Image (cartoon, rainbow, N blue to C red; front, side, top):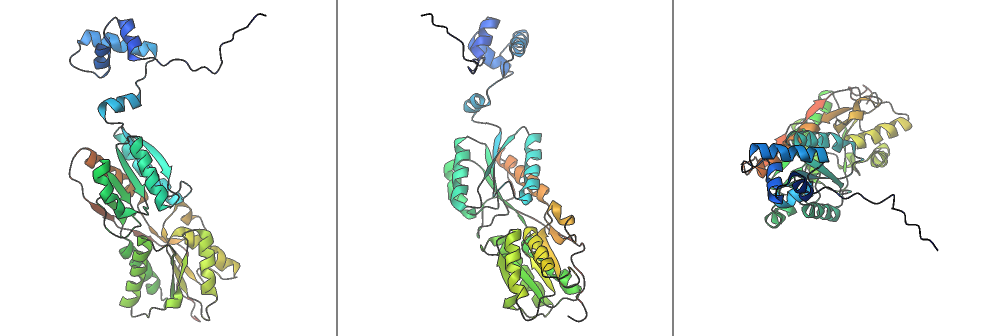
Length: 349
């Protein structure tokens, strides 16, 4: 019986190596390596010949091999809660823009807002030998401090959600921004202002709630515990949380929400209840997501400079990688964006 042998159509072609170029150029392996790294130890004519041969053969240096040799991979790991969160998209854009401008590539991974998974993702980045790590909305925060001396990888947090200080972070000025948002409602004449917070007790929620309380106090308005409800940071949670406000004997005339996603749920539920925004109830969000300007009515909210925060985090990381001094805790101001979801309360309310 004749045996027919066929080459596998899926076989992977052998990758060109430095040794292949050395054979073609009739020089040593070390000479090729130096020439491709533009070492002054190789004569100009020889280096140009080697580089020309490498280009003709289609040689591409292995980033992994180069990283092992130089202990520098030109990669950054970025941990986000979820790529489905519209809030993180602009932050990632700012990180990538600055990283690419300085010759770095970005690896992205989800933590799913889970503290244990966040730590696992950071360790996986360490194993990949990334040069630095950025973590958005960290659930473990200050716990990174003891890890830094062991990992020897700089880490920068954006909007750290864990109480306590971390070595390097970029944060929105939550208290001041939420105070301004509440002051806006008070200036319109609202006296029964509800706060829809986040049920998980994150640092950002605590600070935004504190700003809300400060604005009420400075205006001489009483704090009413029944006007405080909690969602989960998502639109569905906002819909469920506002149910408790709808059940009150006297409705609030305005609701200040922890974030825009919660505010979108509030808008939807109020409309389903036959209430008109802002005629019956004014609504304010926080974040200024891209879709906030396109909902009905367009949402008054606090704008976080998300792209700039990503840029600042990456700039901080680059300074640390260069061994330079860098500001430890960077705080950026929010900006109140007034749209059509807020107005003075009805005279009969």
